[in-house]
Length: 496
Image (cartoon, rainbow, N blue to C red; front, side, top):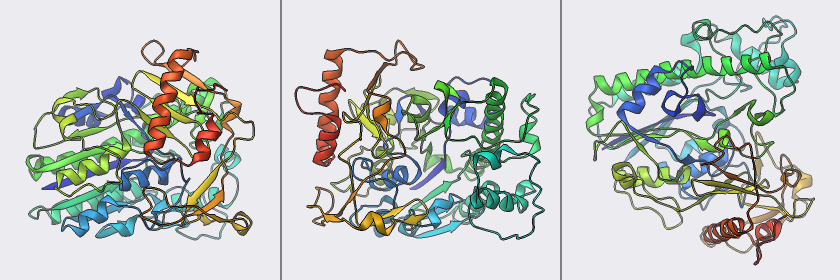
């Protein structure tokens, strides 16, 4: 048995043909939908990048206990479990957060791994001269000031040809793995690119696919915040995002071609997924993490081919989440699922749309706690303006790109073990958030009547039911007591 996971970052569901988008040129994603099952109700769990990848390894929600960080000593890691059971797990990725503090031990769970440098502000190459070819007046520099922005321009100077681009090199290594191990058995390949995460750096042949009439200052890297720009700028950003998706589509096609060539469809599980989406001006916002998690971010594309049932070109309505992918891979290789994994293998969901849950949680540490049952999305805000109490529980106190600061560690406590920490007491550290969700309040949307989530409404009876489901799922996750206090989830349910 063999398995391939092709993972993109920030891939928007609403920009793909299989989900109703007719203007983005992505023929290989259309072809993918014809060869796999397309999931209509796939949702994130924990946000953003590394919390999502922790779920991909552990099959359980991350965001109620901790924010961004590495694999914990007590975590069960899917690729490591495969390795221990004689299934070779291999990672090829240009997702540079794997190679820095805050994500530095995910790749070592695999039996073997290869990294490709150069995405975004990855501290890769050094050029101390000032002639980097930065377009005059680039808004990238306005939005992303400092050495991180300059590093991105340095990296681009080493990728002037498409074959040198990080994504191209990543897929090239993935194809090399498939060709080299075509006759072998019992392997899992995770082929993962940082694209189409911003900045939307791609090449003229993809940009020319779109009739972009924008004439303003160069920008392919939107800020994180409210949309303040003119409509033609918003359209420009959508076009450059689409161009990068078209590039992703091209390289996805190389994997599908290789599966055809090597006749891998007969015995190879294929999963094509992402960690989350991205707002391209919808709801008046750019990006993610600084606003409520609307469906443009939380509702994700997912495609699965399982050779055991051999069904393709169909759709599945069951509610599934990122936490289900680790159990799905383990079950495929007949590796026992650890008791702490809360996700469910999707074998029967692929075969006959068997439901695996009534509702699911999703969110960012310290932001709204969100719940969906497939029809409704309920975004529960904290009841106190100061968004507390809030703590981080970890043995690996690391943020994105750096460890916790010493001032954050002055008042560390030790928490009693959680159900999933295998008897370990964790550090209990005062928490912080990107934004205070109290300012948005609690929001409730009916996706059947309001699929664009433009009209939040109130319904006390419905909110009480959803609060009950939320509390039940939080208890199943052994959420810290202060998360219930923070959200006001005592009975009867209080609405902020």
